[in-house]
Amino acid sequence: MSRRLLAAGLLLTAAAGSAQPVPPALGARPPRYVEPAPYDFAAHTGWQAMFDGHSLRGWEGQTDAWRVEDGAIVSSSDGQGVAANAPVYLFWAGGNLADFEFKTEIKLEGEKANSGVQFRALLLGKTDKPNSEWESFGYQADFDFANTQTGALIECCAGPRRGPRPRQFRAGMGMALHVAPAGADGSIMLASIGNRADLERSIKVGDWNELHLVARGHTLFYYLNGRLMSVVIDDDPQRFIASGRLAIQLEGSGARKVSYRNLWLKVR
Image (cartoon, rainbow, N blue to C red; front, top):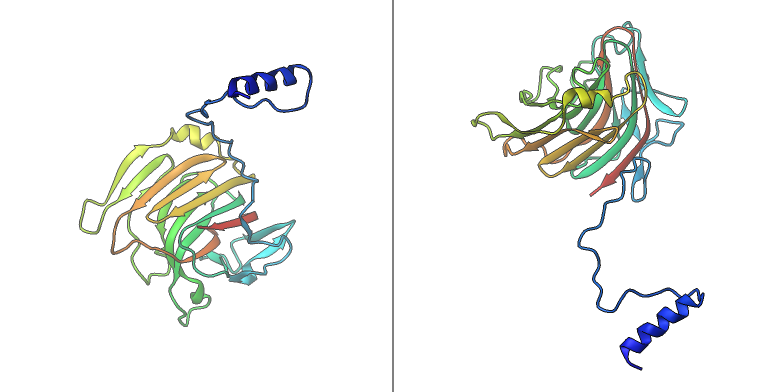
């Protein structure tokens, strides 16, 4: 039977009500482009759960400043306790991360509250200062209640007054930044990736926000609620950090509280 007759027979069978599928026309080509699937923050296929929902198992750090509450990892302070004058960090105990993606939901409360995710962080070592073994240096995706720092990618932190001095680059909300090698002209803004006012409207102050970090080699991406907030391309060969620890944190002043839930990791 010729190909033409075979194709015609299949079409007639389909027209007669058969459940047999109709193949594409012989020689037909697939479409040149295919529309991407919509972003789904809740999709976790291929991801590793970092939080069991009821304990701090798998996390380490200043555990006296952190607890589990209503299915979230929480830290809070009234300005008088362990978190009164310094940031408090909780590190994922799974070791160093190089190329990875991290997703979580974050809720921050308190007018002067600040939080964020420290990543590719290097621990500075223990001294005679309490909790000094959890002081670190690395990249940080910043998040604060007032939204003056939210969406920014920076190098942090100068607080311990030891270790490397943080570089002065700051990819603020809506910026794609190139960090030049030491001795060059600092950082260069490659592009605006969104209107700041528009991006800020997507942030839910005092409520849950979907935070997504992507680290690929020298390039770092920071997303909030499905919007790209900032990008850093770090091309400083002397200061670029290839891998390190991941931590969540709380700092600021006055009464403040941060909650993290649904923490997921994908290692590349």
